[in-house]
Image 1 (tube, one colour):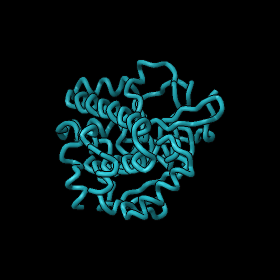
Image 2: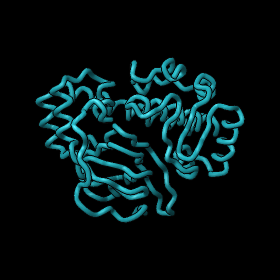
Image 3: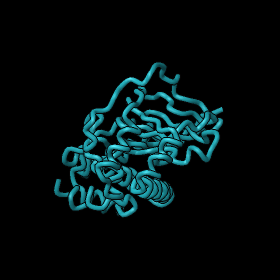
Length: 267
């Protein structure tokens, strides 16, 4: 049985979103992939109008449990992770505000990995039949979700390349470039600064390095004045040099004009 971070939070759904759909991260993300009408946005908002709060380090869904609906991250950082019987852990994806998880939930009966909160999170769950009904009525939503799903697949491939072909410092530089653009696309950056509620240990089990290697790489990035880390905030000091170091090409994120390298560099 896979280990888990802690007990599932109890209680009812604990918050309701504001009716301003323009600032909803899930809607903003899907608008990167298709032009949504007012009716499309309203339909999405109705699906995710309620959600649940999870504390940091809580398990949202555990390996072996029923795949219970489509998860939408509304606030905070979560991750997909898998465990060996020894307890060794690998983070296989970050889920930031606007991301969905388990679009294929109705096709699998049990979870083959664990979804966990890395920081305090708000998560909405959409029943598969409700999403299916919405996409029948709003075909543009189906197109946007399919494109978003393809980006998730492309991101996983890029992570494999990151671990297999890049040096320690290049892996971390690439990860930081990706996260900044993903957060920028949903309006969660201020200039070149974004929230980064990750520990060195969590970065290590993402990029396949030891804590010592991560610490050294972060120090090297600081010495080269490429990044600054203060508390849980990351600031990219030189976007051009950081992307050159990482050989970062954002094409796999398919973000179009929502978060381009030129916009990031001039922010």
